[in-house]
Length: 86
Image (tube, rainbow, N blue to C red; front, top):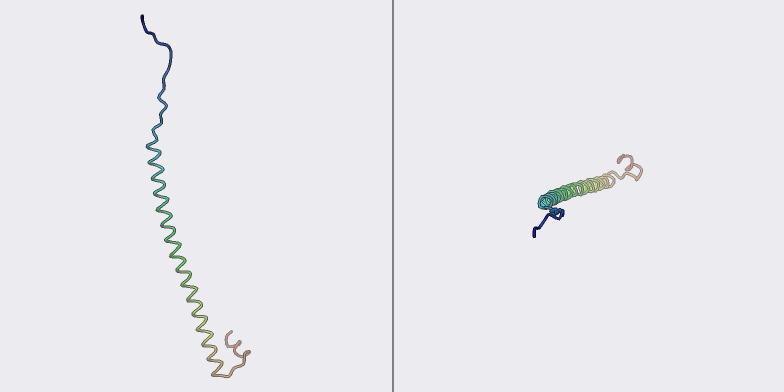
């Protein structure tokens, strides 16, 4: 009795996903680093904007205080004070 070839073909269809998984992990790491850097930049810019706003309020407040002193010393009317302010 002789065993013969029956014509069946067998293919290995397994997929090696090691490279794909490594690539996805690298992309995730880069994205995480970029997100942290962006967050740091946003925090820094926000602090700067808040600082500028606070400085503007302080300058305006100091100006109003100084103009009140000018009005008190000079006895200027509201209309005269508006002219001085302009």
